Image (cartoon, rainbow, N blue to C red; front, side):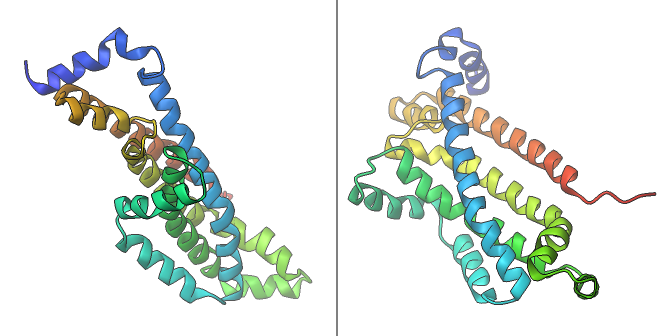
Length: 224
């Protein structure tokens, strides 16, 4: 029997679908850390990106974070996050993983928010000013509405990257689907390794499709 067939047998084995080490619980752990991370990253990056895009001040910060985010591997970030979490008495598992994934999620959200807001037609902005709208009203009612699709692209990119990278949690004694891959390597169980990789891929694809649907909903509607 080939390793693919063995992985399919492992995936359909009822014993792997119950208990704390079962697939449903591992998926829950994976989704929990991923959703929490993206929400926290968005809560920070979107307001900052809006402010920079609206005022034009701090563009160097966006470019720097974007370049650094692409240059540093996620594994290296996790290696830096681990001693920080230990020093802060946060322990292993969840928090070191969160710090690493948070650093990974910030650049695409911040960059796309900045680009989206800064790319709004300046004639529209000036027209809004002429109608008596203040800076906050312009940002909230005009720029953010028009920038929403671009912001959602950043959120989609960050979400998929975080879901795919959250497998690293297992390296620092965390949960999630990465446990199957790490534990499979430990006992040389190729079926478990491939099964875990398949589950991560399926979850990443689902995230891409889901966030793509949300992105389409965020596009401004135009009357025909």
